[in-house]
Length: 146
Image (cartoon, rainbow, N blue to C red; front, side):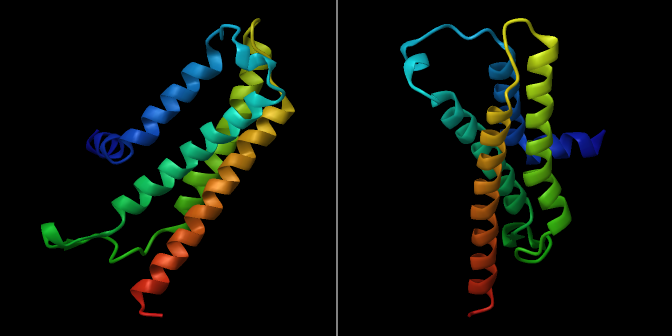
């Protein structure tokens, strides 16, 4: 149980964004003037999932940094487990996105799953992960004095 609370504490913003995404994915949206803008919803999908992935990256990197105030070096610098970061910030949001699109199509009568929404979600995740990768690479390079 302690590990669950630790996870919630470390990833509170990621979990909050996940809750918002789930809510926005399954509520019945009102019609607005923004519906008239062609493919505006694809931009929203890109931003939601890109933001979700970016927050996962930031929280993960925050949890795996040096913490000299406590006299503890957690994972010394930015030594991260790339497999967990790849799964958590890249694979998980894309799989979640696909699951939500399928649930919208088959479990609701007022929403429909779309391949283009899934593509927009995945593109947002990929863009955020690329930014995170280059941030991490630059951080490590500066740490070595290069």
